[in-house]
Length: 614
Image (cartoon, rainbow, N blue to C red; front, side, top):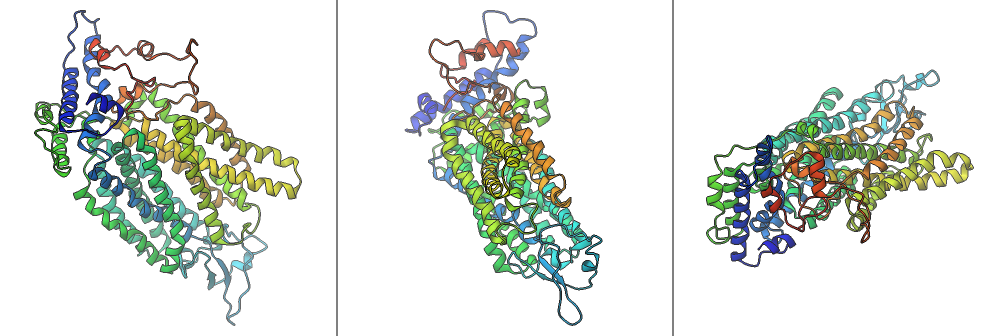
């Protein structure tokens, strides 16, 4: 059973399951007790050894139990994974609804005789009247032609043009700012109360606020309610992401996450058709929110994360969940997991250990890894807007395609191509190698667009600018998505919600640059692009400091996360002196003095990251 657990193979029979589970809990309980050693520890080391003994091997032993109770080949596990995929379609609808609800239409003033003159203010830009065209905005009744398939949207409902055009950008801020605060707050709460309660309460409140948005009586009410809608949407996104990561074995984590991304993109591609069917923005908003009603059933059918319960030492809840899962998988608790429940009952009196993301500040390596990935996420999504505006011609009065749907599907197609390319690249190069490759492509596209194009003629410049913009959008989207996934893997289970919240909030700050630039009529666009181009160069250097998490067990607690150390991109040759510290040298260097019991428990196939391979 131990060999099957190390290799990641399925359970051959109930006999192996019983022995594997017994090994897990006997080792766990043995390491939880004070270590017995012939040599007396140094003063101050005994307490440290006792506190670190159980956490050090928890990360390598816990997956064995999870595979036996809920393996990926079981019907129950496949059902749970499917349940994390389905809401991605609704999330895609909500994330891209701003493109339709707040699209700037063509507009002109309707005169008394029924005839009007076209306004020379181009659609999609802030229409602040200046001295030359102040008379064009002096109108009491506007006529609109909406390009996004709707007969009426928020802009035409409350005449958000000319002097009121800035309110459109504030409405766009609302959803993004709500997402940022939602990721930060719900991520911390999810580490204390669990992923499942956050998911349920987020669903309940997104139904309340989302449906109330459709009943808004003015743009102020609309923007305020959109903030709370974004806050709740962030809770759903984060809890599902964490549940998905904690449910999957190492070999399947990335592909299962990418399937969820593809389903979310399906929502992006289907959104124009949905808008064309609804015709009115209020109906569209209601249709987007109502499918979340189905997620109320998740409270009954979706269990709490067993990995989080065990990592936080909530053994009573773990025992109940294990018995529930064994019944659903039609396993015999007396034979398949023999000895597990009695051992758990002995540990019920142990107090749970819940950790806040703030604890990461006192670590040596973990906080650096999280900060590096947050900066990568911010840079990837921030510079994406620079490439998009360059491709669409931010200085021109009309987009290069002169068609809303062509622009929309061009952006969506580039994002889809980016995700498709991530699958083989990350599978071959790993997480760190793939992130480094896409960041290098982003930096090259940005620097060439900023510097080399100034030496070209206008005709050649436009073609090369479009090409570099497509490459930049392609690679920057991959950088942002891969940074979020990477952070979810290397952040320990006890603080995974907070870590995910930080990196997702950083991505939200990157997206927030788009409405900020639009609010200022693209003033400072070049400086904006230069700053993010410099950030890409810094990120390339920092990515080399990250560990590699491919085919590694998830770290369960902060000591496990500290054992994730960086390695060279290419393995050193035989006889070549390695330049990086080994695992034992790292312990001496970092001041972590593990007991002899812990050292004996770590098997010889421990990887360079200090995590046992599946």
